[in-house]
Length: 97
Ligand SMILES: [Zn+2]
Image (cartoon, rainbow, N blue to C red; front, top):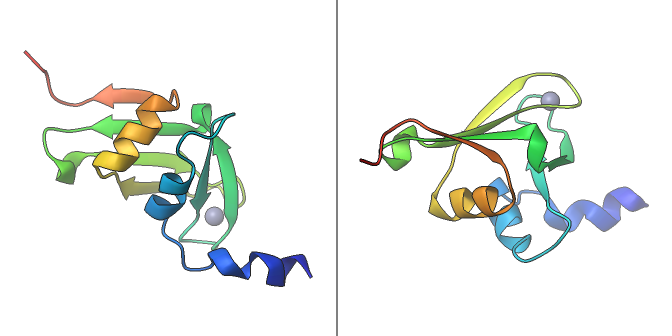
């Protein structure tokens, strides 16, 4: 029953899921695991964001709560904005001198 009710979000990318979270509190981030295909919500403290000099070196990471695999995905501008706005720990890989 609940499975069919949720089927509408199948195939949604993390990016679009995050976009849908805009302005919603409390802050949790919906994510999916590419390994076990689990879907879950993560608190800001469960995510890490690394901002590089270019978008190609900017990514976010988290540990799948279901299978324990380390997931790392590229983060576009919008995701960076949402993650930093949601209090995710951010590591800046380049200096802004
Ligand atoms: Zn997993």
